[in-house]
Image (cartoon, rainbow, N blue to C red; front, side, top):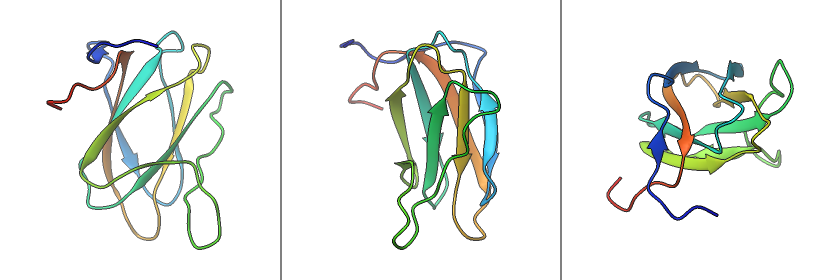
Length: 112
């Protein structure tokens, strides 16, 4: 495991529109981590996968189990398989907004 601040892959950040219909994007398969910035007032669920198109993300709702949640107004660095080049994002209800996805390596610093 790396013990270093997140080092982004510059010029690879994607602005992704999220809604209750999952959005699929491609990310650098060689990147070990992906930082997801969710500046919205709602939760976004993400899933990384090695298939193209990406396996659809699932939002947790009621008794339905979902994929990894990125909380409102927050960011997370998630580790993915270094062969996974697909990512899917989804939210719930009538929510729509933009999420920023940046591949890279390392983990978020305490100051972030």
